[in-house]
Length: 80
Image 1 (cartoon, rainbow, N blue to C red):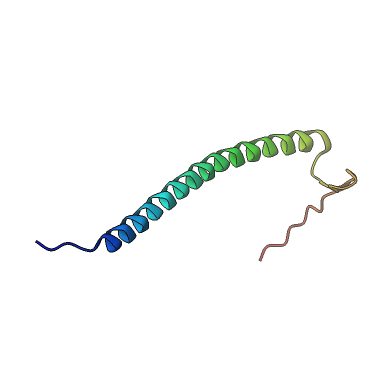
Image 2: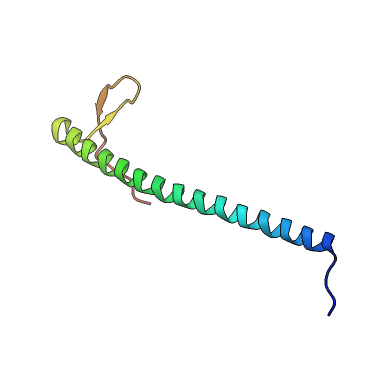
């Protein structure tokens, strides 16, 4: 029975080891992505709750995010 050379076997195993390491890295990144998506959902929930709180207190207004100044919101919304 014939075999591949030692050098070919070494190269094949090196390539497969690199592939396995990369799959582990990708798996770690996917796990981080999953955690970050959950964190983002929590932030969105907090944002929505707080904007409702502000809306209940100040009504429908526009808020300048630099100064905190509030202006009445135009009630007319153009539909396209």
